[in-house]
Image 1 (cartoon, rainbow, N blue to C red):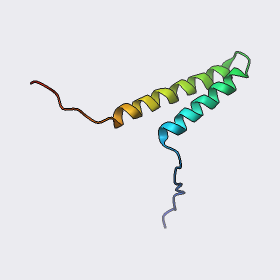
Image 2: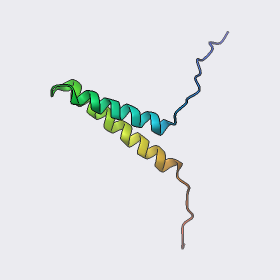
Image 3: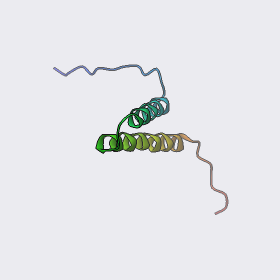
Image 4: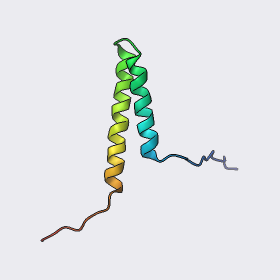
Length: 68
């Protein structure tokens, strides 16, 4: 017998979810005193921004090369 996966229909795109998480993490970080937890939140926000940019880049249409 195989286990049934929990599947959920996403209502937001990946980029929207990543941007929302990054914004939320930055807001939470601003309310914290300087320290490890604040730095971790800022790092995760930056990682989500980079992931969003990479996803945009990878989903962009590919243009044929000119020349040879």
